[in-house]
Length: 98
Length: 390
Image (cartoon, rainbow over all chains, first blue to last red; front, side, top):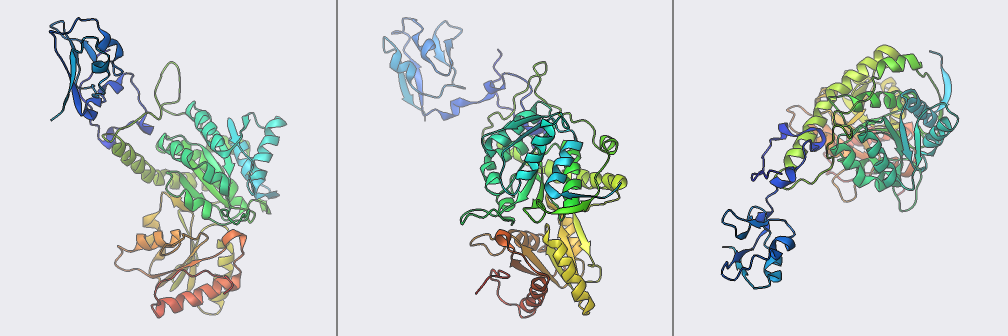
């Protein structure tokens, strides 16, 4: 499913009757990254690419980036810290958002 | 069409039958019980081909009606008093999802102390729930307006649930002469119900999804704009109904109000007693008239300003006590509507008829006398209950 990385901003005239949702998948527009107070940072020297961060992320936002390293999609990452808690090699650190 | 004698509740049930409702989900509660009892009977004996769902509460009744309406079924229910309050949160869902559930409310006081008798406390507690709300003044009107409610609510430009208010006992339990319509007339008046987003596996939609702060306000503004613009369709429907029945309805009704210096304003069945009071005061030479709010939501701002005309004093009766408020809900609303007008009458509010207490013709006349006194002496506003023992 393609992720639309932008929340649409319809006017009230654009709203469907009863605010019904007519197409599937638009929950992917929801910028849950706004909730974050900490972000996960990977130390790729320690990372063994076991993928446990990918498996445990409740938001499903940890994926391999084009360089082949695990990273969180910050549009969705809520900063829950589960990836850092579960990482075998402690390759992930949670750092305060500015 | 010949006149027959019929109880108000049975007439409402008859309207739902003539409209050929598909689904009725209801829970019995006094003074509404006769409506759903009669409908259960009509379904049981095969006179009405509908799904009758005897639910375990009013909350479930409204929830079942919403589900039925969402798949495109013509849906009807009825309730009163505590039952309406138990539906409260679900009422907002029906209007926000734009599902035209039609409901008769046999207006009843709210506990405690327990009262099964009539007043408008139940209506006023759900005033802002986004439904079209219409008041009947007698059994004939309860029949007519219930039938019209289907046409209004289901109109593609409206798609809102509609409440038809009939005063508990005074209308629900009184046998009156009335004239019903033929099935063929109703079929012409009431086209089949189709919802543009009715639930359909071949055309799936999500109803009642989550909306964050970036969407909710737009959704609510759209809902409010739609309810306001529904007024045009409501007036058209009543016009069309008039053509087939000879009985015409308006958002604000007038009675001997043309040259009136003093106007009474009422809502519901007490209007007919007020008419008698107006007739008697007219005979004594008082230039008095009566206006009656038929359409409570969407509120008819223009019509109310027009109806008030050049009157100097407007005496408003509320059958609901808004505890700790400046005045009754109808009085507060009417006064607010008139406030921006350059020329406006002095608005004096009275509370009365609570928990089934009658207001006599004499008491209406006292209200006028006392109202004039309060207006002329500019007596500081305080909630005044007519007929309360001091």
